[in-house]
Image (cartoon, rainbow, N blue to C red):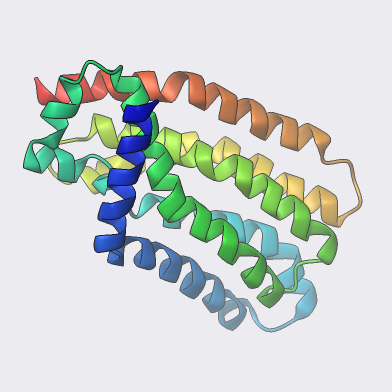
Length: 221
């Protein structure tokens, strides 16, 4: 646990020193959402119908912007070799890096989403479910993204390859996240969608750190 917390503290300090990555993610999210009313028109009804989908799609794309740097900096400066040689299980250290990634990207997106939902005239019944769904969904995106980032480590044009790897795996999170918000807005039960998002998060917690750790070992050999 001490090593896990140390990895989180280290990555958070590095993120604060290089704050441009986190700022870029949030600014991409905000600017992309702000553009939609200009593109589809200011009609409240239209914006309300597409609000959940716009927020989730832009959050998904924004979360991908910093994935290629999740392990790349450690790979380039040799820190990854030391991490893999640590007596602490590598999967636990991967979890620490994923937690730091979510705190610097997923959490800001989560905080910005309700403000942007007002801009898109999202029905007030969907606000709480939007926050809960993103609280369950964004960590899953970070966990899946960690596997993709580990697989493309050291590859040429890794960012493009990373997108091709993780986007299909992101689709279930997107579908059930949007479905939960739409169901809440229309007055339907949302328990099923939230349970599926919870199941995906638990499955990702169990499988993704192990898969990412295996890919990292292959990358440093």
